[in-house]
Image (tube, rainbow, N blue to C red; front, side, top):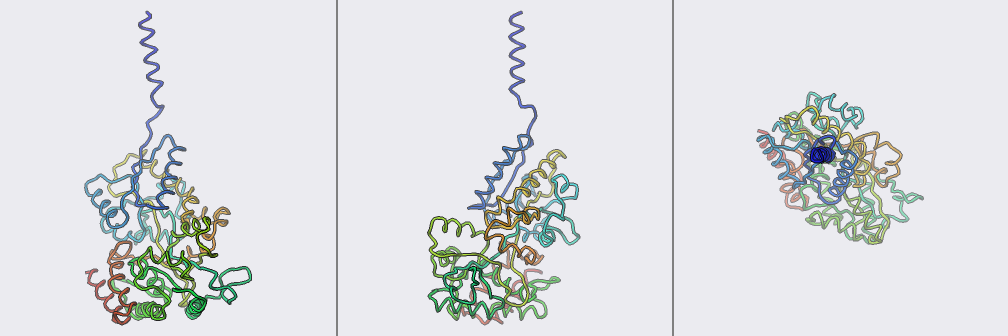
Length: 423
């Protein structure tokens, strides 16, 4: 009898030791390193702590071509993740490669979201030509203009509150750079002139501010867009000839020129905002800085932009319960994206982007207006992150602005090389 009691007691204890339910394990892939990676890992940890019934198993892969190659291969063999980060600029290529599942209105409802919760430009970039959604935008990240205010003191470019003002045209901006040069700035404008991303983002911004299209209806620089591309390269070449921008500066060097106080202006992504904040907090900047939306230099307000988004690989054979868990993850991330904004990004989820908490986040709130005029890459398989367009920027545009090719010739070569890749 005592043996039976002990056996029953042992059985009860073993059942008590089991969890009351089996958690849904969500396999997650991202390409986020540096400050972005730290913030995302913290978000994943918070989610897991708050959701014992759903656990994210995260893996970080190498950014760029290696990540997207891995995604394509994994989908082909049916071993992809349940959810992954994705650049919206890669959307056209992802659709052509059939690696992205459709995210339905029912999926969005399961996440507590709807398309109307997001900025229109980001939803358009996340959708196919028929309007079907294939990713959920997480942020809008763009280039902005970082400013060292010390070079502008006493000029018309700072108001009585110390805000940057008066840069409303190309002539204004060039006047400000000339002033900074006269006030001792070695290189008034730093950006990555020897880097594909830095060169492309400035070039594309200058093109879009002319109302230009890099690719339209399957054609590269059709009609008067060829002239607009040449003008963008001509402007960048002029900045080089005046000694306002650095010679073949790679990305780290371009940032260092600004943080060391040698540059009055710096064109770079919002992702460097944490760098500036951290250095200022450590009293390592030595000057007062801010970041503003790229001014309207050429008549049209537009700035190169991209978005990190969440996507589900095509061919996923997950259960309805697993899919609901995945959408729960995406919905939670969107609603908690204020923490992600700390990396300099603008939340794509409007309830967070318009919240009082975000409005108090500087300098993000100052440049957040760019979300309404964000200029995403052309909807083309040859555009987007780590694409032929980026390759052409370092192989054609960068040499041209350094004086190795006429701007018109460079635009024509850009047109010819990219057009060949569309056929």
